[in-house]
Image 1 (cartoon, rainbow, N blue to C red):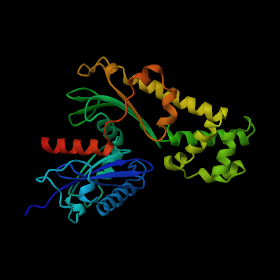
Image 2: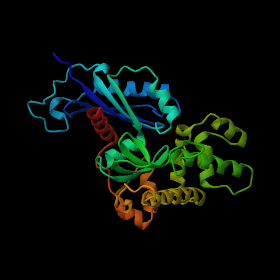
Image 3: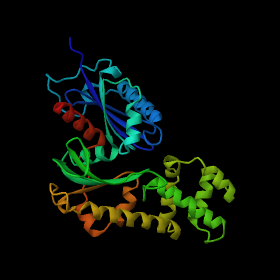
Image 4: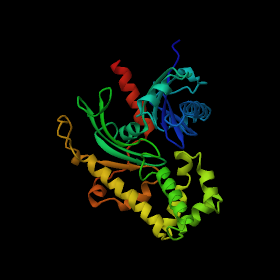
Length: 330
């Protein structure tokens, strides 16, 4: 008897790792989540988060009657006990756009039947547009953007025959403008300027000091000394709350982030002269996703607003479909 195979799609970001478990017929069996899966930050932690989330997904398989898709008798799943070595893992991971981080992650031992990895940005874009051409901006703990223009040949970032043109996504402190991590980092910088009496006190300053339980610049510097994107991102809700209460300092940061996203969105509509195989990107739909999307969406330009659509599917579904297509081409 041939052992059945399964697929797990992973959406791995700086804060959360979300997975979707499917059988080989595409029936969604369960969902689960775990901790950070940013392979640029820590490849080993990312792998463990993925394993943890996968084991949770296996334990949380829905009753057959509750599975999302209509199921024929021929393709009806039996919901047996599933082992990790029966699972084809398809992962869209933060940091996978950096070759050295991807190489390190792929060198790690894993218990899965097979492993396919692309960036979380590409997975989100493929899912959002159901594999069709489109643009996407992620603004969560980190930020990045891409435009996907389908298969063919060209000079843009290529995942085998899939062609993307990416913007940003290099990680803090050198990139990820407008993200939660960036907002938190900028809020800390603002607070240090207040402590030095170079700018007036603000609600943002008070919120950051309260959040981190500090009352002196030295305490603040010590508290954030080991912070990475995830920890700075945890300060973003304080920035957003101050902004919503009318704090000018927080509003200036939010507007700075919105200006960056507007600039990025506009570049996604441009067609580079040497990319002759690309379609007219001005006609492509745009998705804005991530935990801060609701904050920035009203501040986008009218042009970008008219192109916005809701994602058609999840990053997990997008990367599973990608893995299946790559396997068929192999």
